[in-house]
Image (cartoon, rainbow, N blue to C red; front, top):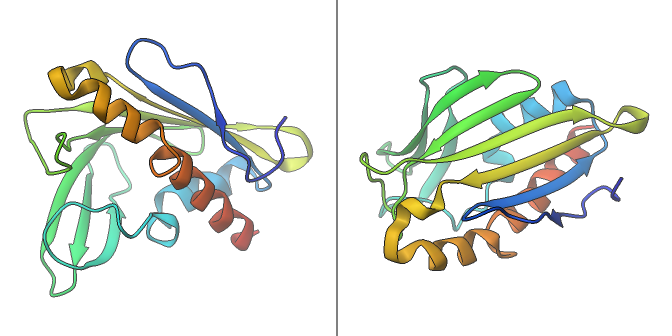
Length: 166
C-alpha cells in the first residue's frame, strides 16, 4: 500500500496511462469526491473552451455529459459517462483531440476503480486507454497525460480533496 497522496505510475500497456493512489476515505466517499465534487480537485488550467472556467461537471449517470461551464454560462462538452457503477467503477468517454478541444468522433476511455484497502482507505486506479486513436499524435498525448501535469497531478489534487473531505 502507498502513503496517502503518493501517485504511483503503473506500467502502461500499449498506449495507455495507468496511475494509482490510496486515499484515506471509504470507497463510497472516494467515488463521491471524484465524481460529484470533481470541481473541487480538477486542475483549473485543464479545460476545453475559450472562456474562463467556472465549473467542471460529470453528470451522475450512464450517458451523462462531461463538460465545463464557463463564466457567463457557456457549456463546453468534453466527454460522456460510459459506465456509472458507484462506488466501485466509473468509465468516461474522453473526447478531447490532441489540441485539447472537443471532438465528437474521437473517444478514448478513462476507467477509474475504487477498491477498499486497509484501515478504511481506498485504492483508486485510473487507466486512460485507447490512446492509439490519436494516430500520429498518440505519443505526444500519451506523454502529456502520463506526466505530473497530466493524470499524476490530477490524482494528487483529487487525493488532497478527499483528505479535506474526511
